[in-house]
Image (cartoon, rainbow, N blue to C red; front, side):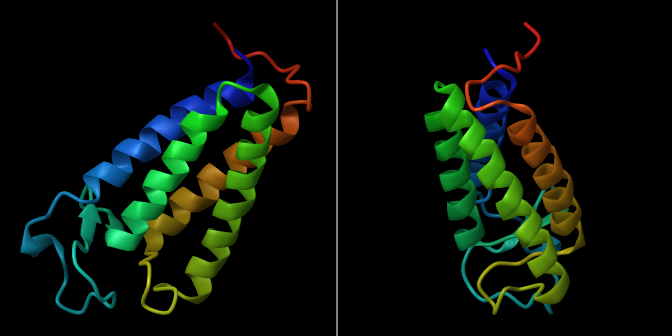
Length: 138
């Protein structure tokens, strides 16, 4: 399996689980009273990453796309590059608009995760040739 394929498979599986976990209600103590995002199922995954229902739906979509693309080297490469660009943009947006107009919460932990995930995804995508010449360790 090529590196971009392995990335899409693992990243997709993780984000699918994170999306599901985001729908599990959290104790009210984990949600600050001044939490600026409106909507049901808002809280913090692992007590660290701010989420709401829309954020969880996006995580499910990202996870499903990763699992759908990992079988093809070209699709996995496109997924890796796309996720890299998207997450680096989310990092910048999170610095400027921490609630993205009240739709999706992006706190400091989210921003750091988006920066690291985006950089890794983009590096893997760009390191993989279109034909998928970069093999992942077995």
